[in-house]
Length: 173
Image 1: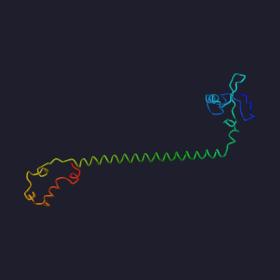
Image 2: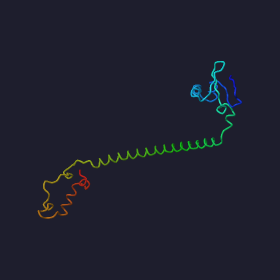
Image 3: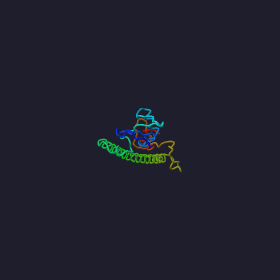
Image 4: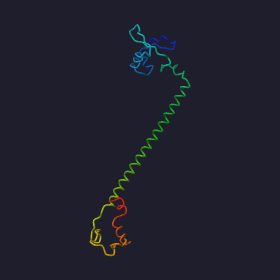
């Protein structure tokens, strides 16, 4: 296997493959650490490259798992709680957003239906007979026409106001 020199000082001398297995990373990651200078390396007599791995980083070494700082564990637990809270909050917001989208879709559909209904109500109907004709007579009766110099009578005002609805007179149309 490998030469475990330096175990007393808290480091292991292992091959790149074994270091990758002990750290739970790929061999390429170990080579990159060597390249960056994050890990010390040594060329062995057999032609293989050995690295020095601290025992504290060795995931397969039981002693590395025992010496955990309680403060670090507490911070990790707090971060886990925060992540769980944020995940719940995100889920709740997603449900709310979906509900709002459904409400907007319903209101849009209702608005379209009401718009169509208003257009139906405003559409002019064609007269079916002479009684329903909306044409003005050629001459208005003499009593409805004010004589020159006289004021407008109530009867004349009422007949004119019945020609168009008030909102058509105000807004045009």
